[in-house]
Image (tube, rainbow, N blue to C red; front, top):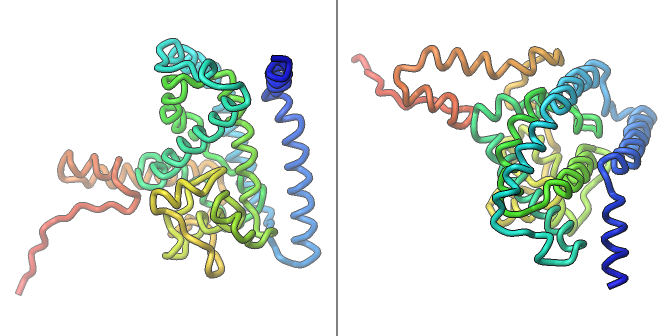
Length: 295
């Protein structure tokens, strides 16, 4: 009983503020060390205009997060009142935290996969992939509307009975973990590449090489990709960016680029089915129209 109490007491000291207090300085140090390594070895991991674009997107993302976070918490706690289970009552508190971490990663896999395969979500998520560089700072190249697009996917968490007060803390840890995959500084890690989302597996995810596109969606674990057929190993040098790069680091242009392209496609749609295809189909979706061949 005393051990269980000490576990609960320790876990209750882990808050979002504490994670930020420890995590952000560590990440800042990693970015500085990576930049120094890049400069000393002339690897050119960082470019000023690319980093400036990342900062512009990050500012908008943080602003949006602050704007909606209270409403999102109210939504999740309201749904929690109708939960199917009470996870906290089913297992020890340490197991609750561990299961929450795994469940968050599982939900993220499906959100992330949808964000690549559904155009209206890709219009938001492509912001993150718009950098042609790969370094720790790219992890912070987050879309202005990203916090809104992710919210519906995580409704399943409180509905199943995951305590939102624990979920928000564990989700922050998971998010900061994701930063570690955005680097060229770390080589392949052997068997770890087949279990966790390592720098090698995440480089593949950011690749525009035909064999790499739409793969490795996991954030913490890569086992989901292995289970659902989206796992690809790093076998050749990765070309980073978008399949069709937009040639700018202006955060406003990046944010609305795909929205404008999608609106043009919708205007030329010839049926409601085509409108739905341009919005909810894959990013490269085009209608199959009969063509008349003149002889």
